[in-house]
Image (cartoon, rainbow, N blue to C red; front, side, top):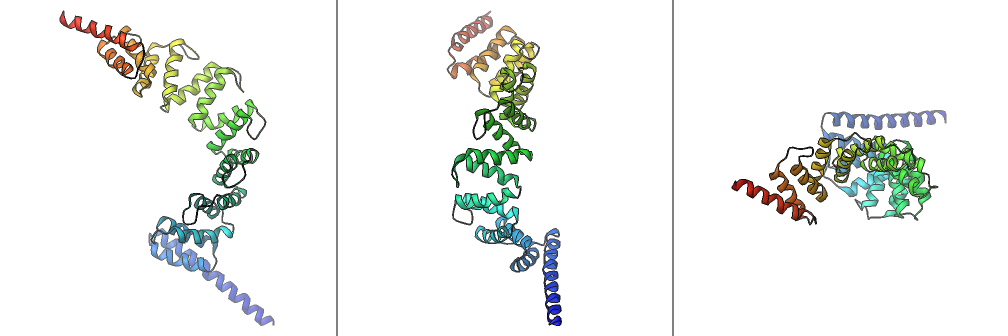
Length: 322
């Protein structure tokens, strides 16, 4: 009996070593860009139940590395890995069922796999699950559970989740309304460059919502939004420098930001910069450029642009005749 047990143990250890060797061979082949050999060894190991091999061969079929792209086969192997607890495979299968990729679209099954991955701490799955609960996709709509998963992802530093949970606290969706906590999460997202959060923090500091009113900090956040090309923020920055709100009055910077907004088609900005070129406010007087911008504003229906445009054109005509 003892000899039989020893034989079984030896056979098992040999088998395990063989599978591990196949996985090692696959990685070595992959590193040498020999993808067909990588597929061969991953497949052998995957067929013997190796979870890592199942994940990688599934990924190969998904992306077409070393094999013809085949989402159905990708789903088969990724499912096997997911059933063994591979978190990346669980997230992948959630995505597959959500999109109907390689499997029939099924939001309930997508939610099932996202939940398994989220419970293992996968931040992307936590985000997806938060979205599912907030919209009722694949699960009954539940803002409290949405807030729970967004919070978990936010605590891991996910910028989108930080913005979402900030919005929840701002509106009282799924959590008690709390402007201070909203400001906390919006600030974290804003510091990572989320333009919507930056715009929100401008509003919060501008009005004193959730933070002490501070026009200088408001201007700081609005500047970051404007620098990312937001047309409304660019126009608003022009106004801040025009009136000296949170920043020193500065005609040149007023003209700079108004011009940026005008170049993106902001009709009021086009009207203003046209007038600036007439008066020389922040820019050299230039009637030709005034006509250019006033024409653009008039073409967009600005009510005051046509009369000023007519006067400016008449001035240019009389000047040229003289």
